[in-house]
Image (cartoon, rainbow, N blue to C red; front, side, top):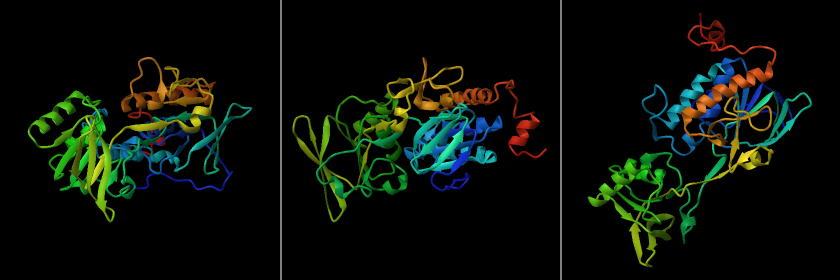
Length: 355
């Protein structure tokens, strides 16, 4: 991935001064940096994963996204790269592979934010753009499975080309499982889908396409079934054994197993910040996207308000309004004017455009 951001390396407990700390380097966190930058505000990003992009790069870098305004289609990786390019003029510090552990309000209503790497930030506001929080795929359990982790057992698809002309067994019944069945069909040598139920959580169009392939004998589908055992020798997977609810076992030849049992989201330390929560999301004002704690804001999938929709484009809207609210908080005696990037000399200067 091209390095389009600065990764700040500091000695433990040294202080980094900034206007805003953004928690989360997913699409909404990156766009938050852009909106803050347009208003002349400096940001530093902290994220527990080791590359920017959030779920877009962690879970589906090659899957197409169709609902970004003015972009008919792009992958998660392409969206991330575009956002990184867009924030280049603002020289955002990005601190990856570390978690925000403490947020302490100061007497002047600013914040000192600490991370698991021992870094300290002094900021005037904090934006939580943590998506669903730190997340891990729900693991599969089966006899012999430990011999294939990282080789033939996959919870994410980062390089679909490795499955070309291979025998695949895909476990799951949600969107991710069926998306990859349909995406890899015609590229893999053979695909078998195994689901523990006969009802699916995926969108109906995907289910219909999958069932049509199964009726034609193009793929195999086993419903009401679970994995029992991984079979192979010398670290090379040969097959998996499954059992249905009637107790009947079936051995399926396999080169690779893909598992999509969903994510186990964990808010981590954010859950301990004393914010007004709605289950595992954070309640916010729809005027400012401020949380119950003044000066702390939340945008993207991690927030909640009546009518909330978990869409990237909604998160972009929230980031824009949050930026204006933060600017007003930092400069309460000045009116924050809307200026347009097409005509404003100030915007052009901040974007580094030549006159």
